[in-house]
Image (cartoon, rainbow, N blue to C red; front, side, top):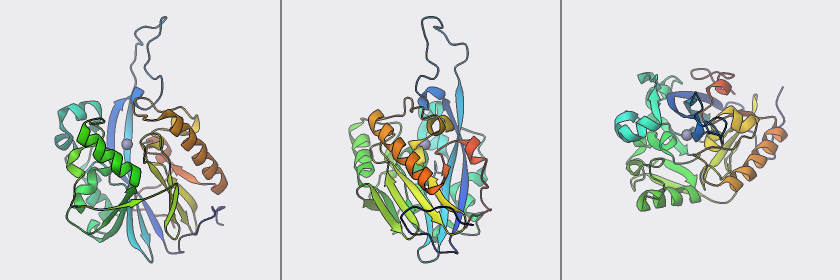
Length: 282
Ligand SMILES: [Zn+2]
C-alpha cells in the first residue's frame, strides 16, 4: 500500500531514508511557545518555570540517481566549547553521547559522511548548520534558500541577530547553492517549500518515498508538538508572526493532502513514533 502523494514525483523504489538522532539541547519553554512561563496579576511569580528538552534531528537520504543527500547537520562537534558558555547556558547541551556526532550517526547507516553528495539546510541556526564543519573546503553543494543565506550573513555582520547564527560556519569555503521562490523539486521525490516565520528563509523538506509515502521534515517551523498540533505560535524564537501563521496553513494543507508523516524540528515525543538509524524507510 502506498500513501496519497502530492503533485510531485515519487522517489525511485530503492530510495532509503534514515532519521538521525544528534543529541539534545534544553531551554526555557518560553523560547518555544507563546506565553509560556508568563506572569499575570493573579500569579506574578509562576511557581514552576518550565524547561523543555529539544532533540536534534537530521535526515539522510540515499537516492539512486543522486547519491547521499543530508538534510540539516545538527550542532556540530564540541558544541559547549564552540558556542561558548553564554549560549550553552541558554540552549544547553544535555545527555550527549559521542555516537551522536554527525559523522558517527551517519556511520550507523553503513555510510561515511565523506560520501555525502549534497546538503540541504532548512535554516542556518547554529543547531542546524553547526555540522557544516565537516564540509569546509569541499565541493559538496550546500543548498539553502536565498533569503536565509542573505539573512544569516547580514545578521552576523551587523550583530542584529547574534546568538542564533554563528560566524564560524558562515564562510566562503563552503559551496553555497541558493534556491529561490516558494517551491523547488530539487531531485525526483525531494522537494522544498519556503515556510518563513521562524526565520525569513526557512524551508521544509518533502520526501515522497515509494513505499512509506510522504514525509515532511519541518526544521524549526515547529519546535515541539504544541506548535504543530495546537498551532501554538513560537515564543521568543519567532521572527515574523504573520509569516509563521501563513506557513502553518500551507504545511497543514500539504500534510493533509499527502497524508504525510511530519517530523518536527525538536520534538522527542513525536520523533519516538518513528525508528531512527540504523533502521531505514523506503
Ligand atoms: Zn533548532
